[in-house]
Image 1 (cartoon, rainbow, N blue to C red):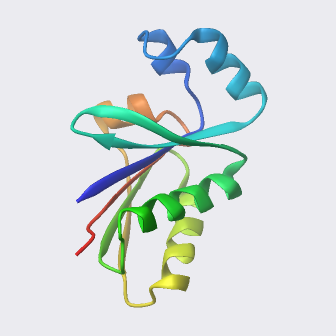
Image 2: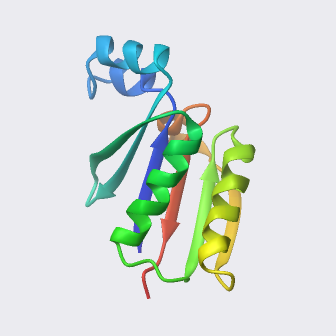
Length: 125
């Protein structure tokens, strides 16, 4: 299984010393969404996308780079059901038989994803 994430805000990461606060502020002002992967507990930024539409395409691209081919997908959102549904539609366009589920983040995942964030877990079969 793999995890790809999209962060709309970097405030909490900046508050915890993982991101420079100036970078977090600039990203917010410019509407930059960070798309990355979690690899053995380490966050790896893969792309910066300006706006949600480009960020969703970047998530789809990252999934394909991990050889996603229509297996199970769980999309957790933090107060962002709209983009979660758009990502589901995007996945189903390419893989109509994919099992895509949407849920809300909870606990610590909500804290780091912040409002607008998406966490996408999937299997590569």
